Image 1 (spheres, rainbow, N blue to C red):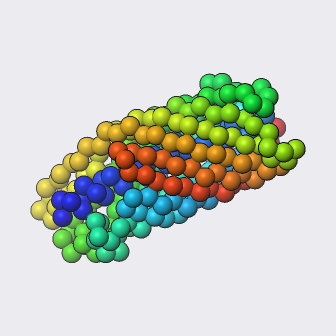
Image 2: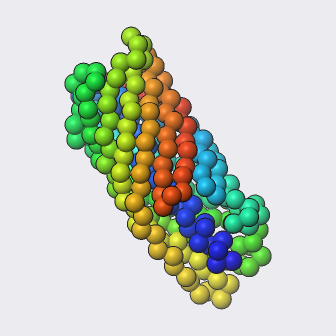
Length: 222
C-alpha cells in the first residue's frame, strides 16, 4: 500500500507539471483582451486522462485561468478503478512581449492544484486521499511566422513545485507525503488564423515524463 501511495503522490507532481504549459496572452496582440478555451489529452508515467482549460487575458499582459483534469491512474501502482480529479486555478504574467516575428518573449506562471482520489483499494481499506501543491514557473518563447496564416511559438520552461499528499486511514490517522520537485517543460504552439491553436507539450519531474496535446480557441475582444 505504501508503494501505491508514494507512486500516486508522484502523479500529483506530474499532473501539476502540466501547469507550466503555455499561457494564452502570447497569442493576443498588444493591449488586447480576450478569452481562451482548450481541451487536452495527457499521458504520463502512471496515469492518462483528459482536461479542460479556460482563461481570460487582460490587455495582453496577464492571464487568469482554471484547469480541470480527470485522470485514470495505473492499476498496478494505484489499485483497480483508480481515478483522480484535479482543479488548478492559475495566474500568468507577461514579462517580455515580442514585437515582431523571430523575437523572444518571457512569462511567469503560478498555479495552485487541489486533487481528490478514489479507487477500489482505497474503498476496501477505508482510506481517504487528497493532495494540494503550489508551482511557480518561468518560460522563454519565440514568435515565428510559419506562413501568412500560421504563427509558431516554441517554448521552454523551468519551475519548482511544493506540495503535500494526505492519506487518512480508517482510524483517522493521517500520513503526509511531501513533494518538492524541479519541473522542466517544452512545448510548441501552432496558431492558425489567430484563432485556433494546437500545442503539443512535454513535462518532466524527477525523470518521470508527461506528454500533453491541447487544442483550443483564442477569442480576442477589444
